[in-house]
Image (spheres, rainbow, N blue to C red):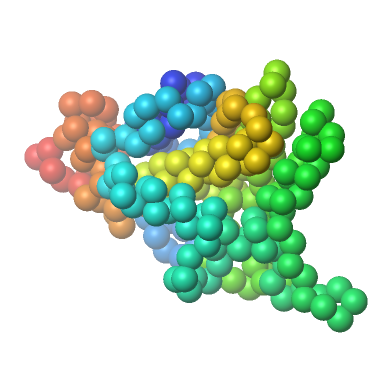
Length: 236
């Protein structure tokens, strides 16, 4: 596992994208999409609200990021195959107990658990639901969120089974640290560190070819692997 330590999530996003482009290997997915893949990565940010929170190289900037974070915390009227708000605030689609549909706010559970037992290691939320996800085409990438109170602050650790690091990771981190602050505010605590673990980080280098150049600077900032440069062709 590679470990990246960065002063903020915007810088962490830049570092992980550049590492994958330089050191990754090419693999076509089960959906026949061309990717550059890499080994497990953990990004540790001690002060997640240190700026810049958004890399200038990212396709998505402030307005989009704020809406994405708001939708994760407050929900959205848009219809998706799944969304993280429901998985965290209303888990249980397709499940029943005692003849009633299952509706679990895992965020409320985290807040209640840490209110009663600040030392707990059990303040976790999961997104995976075997009833729906084993047959779903677009299933959740985020799998687990853990919150810990240590040294008077609320720390968050998240695990992604798979993570599109070029176009999605920046927004994922931005929204999740805002969820961290939402929980911390409910507990009357400051935010501590944020740790973002991706078990299979990757970049869709053909699909998102237009998003590569800001990170590589036409080869002046980094030299991506041969297949990526061949697909892009903008340095010739």
